[in-house]
Amino acid sequence: ALGTIELPTIVLSAGASLSGLVQDTAGNTVPGATLRLDGMFTSLDGTPSADSLEVVSGPDGRYLIPNVAPGNRTLNVVADGYANQTKGGLSFRGEEPMTLDVTLEIAEMICGKVISKAGAPVAGAKVLAMSFSNANKQCRDTVFADENGEFCLASLAAGQYTIAVTANGFRAGHENRVKTGGAGLVIELVEQG
Image 1 (cartoon, rainbow, N blue to C red):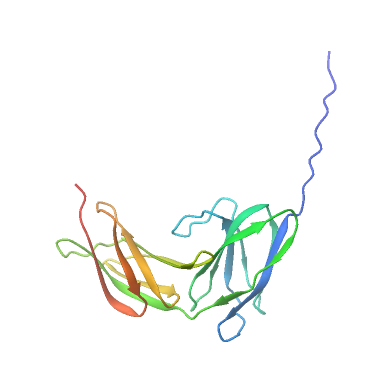
Image 2 (tube, rainbow, N blue to C red; image 1 turned 90 degrees about the horizontal axis):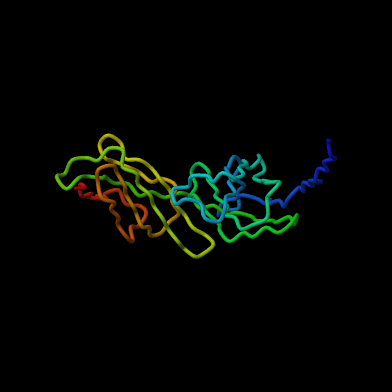
């Protein structure tokens, strides 16, 4: 005998939204900025989470990220010529819209070279710069060293950074309090084993 099956009612909601204006420190709008809303604890190298939402600011510098699920999120903002910016502590509840204007700084650089203890270049080393100016505004950038072991982190806000380096076959290395504007940083890695 066949019985009756009652299917549950599933109600989808629009979710919250995040909107605002991207501009630089001089008040000029920044069109074409990429804004990615991620889970609160994204990876340090900026790899998007499975539920990330990404949009690009329009010609007027405005953006809108619709359908944001409830929870805590982090906003990553990237634009050519400007320092990357990460804003954490964004809490979305229900369908409430949130407005967040973003002010980007002109980018500065830290350039250098990754070498082995023997002085040979370490090609392909992953170089990560992390700055924590306060709990809700951070700047980070990631690059890979070229075949000569050279790298240039070119999307940094002015300030001091911790530079962390990893490479296959080597122990991780780092330098603390590295100031932007320098081009002579040398990070020496020790081979494993």
